[in-house]
Image (cartoon, rainbow over all chains, first blue to last red):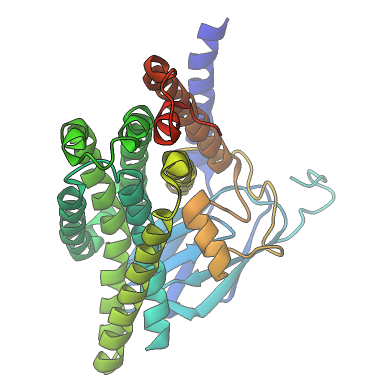
Length: 120
Length: 288
């Protein structure tokens, strides 16, 4: 019984990972002149999102968020990928750790009533 | 200049606190200074390399290279810290009683010295690479070299000073409680690093989050505040934790704690009849 649980759990994790990979929506965030070009990034509720952070400056930046436990250096003139886990409605702060003047918010609105209805 | 100092300070602080506690926890191991220094030097070199190849690392694994590298470094640190804690709970207590007899301690610590080196190496490399990149970013953004240099060094000095202060304060703890306290400090710190590793693995989409924001205590203690930051480093405080972070934290804590108890008991048993204040400290199993 217990022995069967391990492959089962592994399979579940892989399956979740695979579906996530297949249909993850992608959103872009741009850093220019050391700040984010948008201060609010609206994301769908309860959905994993692949966030591509593009740094258009010559110098490195760091996309960081305590609220989301995310932290990635974005070298100059390049882009990196950060996955954002499914989020409940709310506001989540992020910033450029190399320039704290650059602040932004991930905004997740409550899903429309007609669809899944409930929170989470 | 002040902004530079603050950011460098925050990065250096994490490495400095890790090193301070590890240095304290291994006080009975002779010759540890050189290994710790070696770890710091190698870590600094590693930080330079990581910063130099930041571009290539960022592009590796379809843009996930950096998250993976951070996760690997953190897990390596967790493994070495875990080993070190378990080892010290078996031998450190025994050595506490003999701390003045330097000769006795020389032989005992050889194995854990390599772990010490790796722990310091990972701490310095991870935080150092960010300092290097950040200073470069400041330097390249225009003409404030003097302020930047002063700020950078001030931040570095302040971080090291706080680490030194923590180390000094640890030494005030009476020897009979010393290894219990440092053992617990390291245990919580290690669990916090494991939670951070989980965050990076989730960020790279290798592990599910198992729920985000399980709770939110940012209004009580913000992680951006100095105290919040300090607690984050020392005990892994996260204001809005995800399920996977909590799971990694708990599993690491329970695993190391269990091994610690087993080793501590094993080491204590043959000596339980010894009397006297110092001997009692070495003989008592962890009172925590």
